Image (spheres, one colour):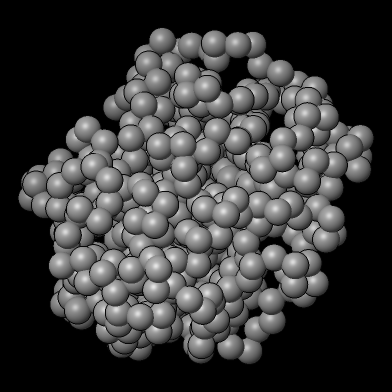
Length: 518
């Protein structure tokens, strides 16, 4: 059951739906240079899920004997669906873990605690060239060898498009097997492809029910009126955004919280360009009513049997509610949101399948890695950077906090407290993401979307590092270069971006500065 707006006839919903299913790209503006091509294969994925799942189950029976954990090495669209599924289905036959970080502290801790002899790894990269998963692959291959494992290749599977370097390496027996992903499906629209369904199948999730859910949702998304759940949602979000409410604020049941990570990428990377975009706000604590500006709209997603945190402030803002009847229905919801995003992109006038500003940040990161350079402005301390933001709130703006730090519940909670303090002091919405994950997610929005962002990139000095076998750089070098490259890309796009380097205990520093603006 969903609820949304009542009258959308003036937006031509029937025409939008027909043209999307006809793969008619004229519904959107022209893509950026190099961003065109056939990207509508995601519409076919619900009908093809069974064949991919069948292959995965066959591979699982033949090659996964004795394995106790299935570990995804990927970024963005290659890893966010497994991240969502691992929280929706926490109890599975095989433990599912996602590694979408190159933080050396995190990876060092994993190397010292993981039972690597019974671990299998999926190297997930659509292009087969993504630097983060390939670097992690080298680290874990070396760890397996150091543990005395002789059949290292049997612990690795490759997920990529046909003809990629990963696919060729699989042919050369460097992997147990290769699962080809559809070339006409962009990464953030690939949830129902092998990137999401291989781990679902291997780990014993209810893939039959998930397939039925996706097929049913795809069928409903063919309707040419407001009963189309994807089109309805997309039109509502876009209509609100065009009226100044571009901050799409999510409130979710506890088991669906990680869905926010996937939605952030889908909305931000698809719509955040040409100075426009939907700004997803996920993982935000409930704020006092006065802290929400007139730039807000809410989407509440409730899993049957679980409550959403109460927030009376939603009564004063446009609110859309989605009720998810059971956990297997997550597959249908993924399709709903993909369809909704393309509809919203049409309504606000952007092309949803390219990401022109992501590559620019990658190029700057590569340059920083090769030259071992620092930001083009000296790093600031955390307190002065945060107080500068808190004392200069922008109506309709938002603060994007990004942490190139080891992910932990304690750090996430302390950042949450800082977000609350900033919103209370300024009325601005806040977002939060860990680097380098967010570079493959909301990074496009920061650089190409509305120029209303204040980016706060937090790094730390640490002596902990992990070498990358076969490379001249370490994981620490890679992480630092990505932070430098992203801040420089934001600044070159006219965005206000602060590069912060912490010297001591980051939790203590965060607590101190939060207290000063509370």
